[in-house]
Amino acid sequence: MKTKFASFISFIGHPLLTLSVFAIIAFFTYEEFHRALLHSSLMVAGIFLPLTLKMYLNSKKGKYTNFDVSDKTQRQSWYVFAILVLLTVTIILFATGQPRTISLSVLFSLILMSISQVTNYFVKSSLHVSFTIFLAFLILPMNLMLGLLFFCFAILIAWARFSLDRHTVKEILTGAIIGLTVGTCSLFCIR
Image 1: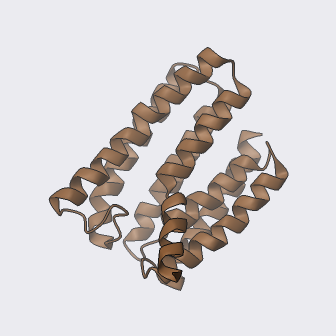
Image 2: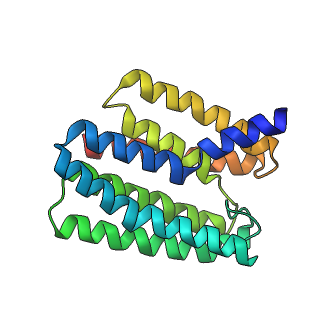
């Protein structure tokens, strides 16, 4: 029962899922329908779809031991791909004059991913934890209670990742520190 619950929490707390849902909700809440549809489509097609496909296909081929790319060595090639995707989208967003909040949010995601890749040479940080904390900081200015709820959710995700033996306490704390650092910076820059 505990393992099933931890797996469920880990699944719904996967960064690709939480960030996708957040982006779509934020777009449709703060933009007119046509712009929200365009921006949501661009984010899904430009970021989430390529990353999900790479993870899925490489898991199926056996290049990754699992969809989360939990192996530290396997993560390096995934990080390179993810950073290139985020860098490309960031450049496109700024070059085409997209809303500042969207452009900066993707830029800070790129920064978080880059820090995580460098850190991965020493310790495999938890991206589930770091992105959930980062997301909490993005939500705070929109809805204080929901932002605080996401901080609590990060604790639950940390427990799930530890319970599933996907991360050690050190890896979870490293992810939390990265998420707190990038999230705090984004909070002050995006406002």
